[in-house]
Length: 226
Image: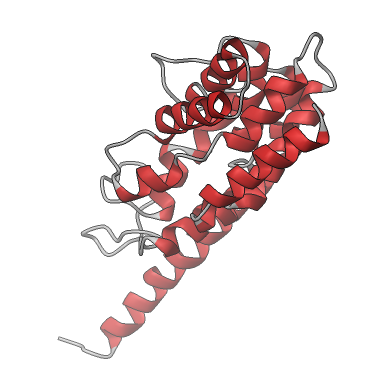
């Protein structure tokens, strides 16, 4: 890819990024993860991969404004329209679009090409480990979601069976389960290295808050003897 092409795509990406949890630094991390994964793969088209990485989240604004929309579908179409507008080949624009539209967790639209699989893996690596925890907490704060919910018995829920959104619910619903969903061997190895940090953080946080509720509730009850 020529530097002027990269600059063009980068500037378009920067004009679209407004979500704090999916900001430009997320894009660069995904790109760098993708390049590391691609270095171990054969026959990767870097022109497609780099463009798809840079543009994969340009539909986030539309999804944030209307949660019923899919940022991957919208982003893929926006990328296609942008590339065609700037004179890129239709086949190239279609391949970039396909990578972007298949980078989410969707059984009906899995990634098929090596570039799409690398983008998928690189994006999911940014939800793994410590960075995934940090990004989830940042997003929870942006949309005013709590860390956890409290059960009727007064104990802190693990999040496993929660229906209301919280950090613990997101961890059990998504973060805990993503480590078996990678396509490339390089990404699987990278994810495994990050997993311990995420597990340790969740376990420590749950133990701390649940212990506080257990001991604190008992001590409070002593203040009001029947």
